[in-house]
Amino acid sequence: MPAPTSPPASPADLFRHSLRLLLAKDIPAWVDLWAADGVAEFPFAPDGRSRRLEGKEAVAASMRHHPEHIDLHDFPGLRIHRTDDPHTVVAEMRGVERLVRTDAPFDMTYIVVMTVRNGRIASYRDYWNPLVVQAPGADFAGSGR
Image (cartoon, rainbow, N blue to C red; front, side, top):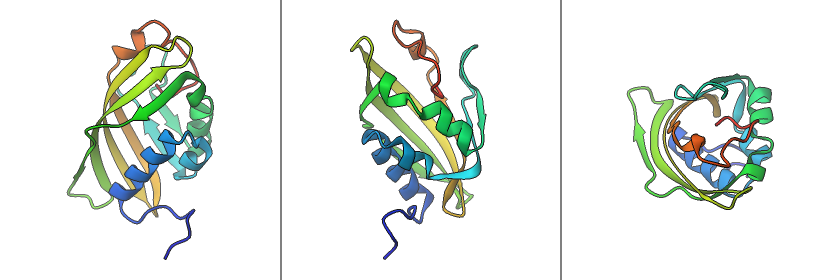
């Protein structure tokens, strides 16, 4: 049996595990799932938002204060699709969240394409809804979103 700190074996299991860590607000453990040279991309990010983070340290810096801005509650409707590449999965989900500053609901839809290399996240393309971040109170900086 692998040690508790070992990442899950399959990309789908790793993705599910990453969501559990985000819900637990365990950002350091979530960042530990990343390869040192992992890349996070947000192709639909509006001007002024990060569109690409290169390296684990950039991902860590972007997510460090995430729980201070967004309170995640659930990811209902999670669907994970396998691809022709055994290292890549596509996930569809909705995030039930709350803006910490205003206590307003923050409902986000996501489609994520994640590629795993050597048990770590190597590539994470997050196609989230850019209209949601234009809501009052969603103007926080320092998050990948």
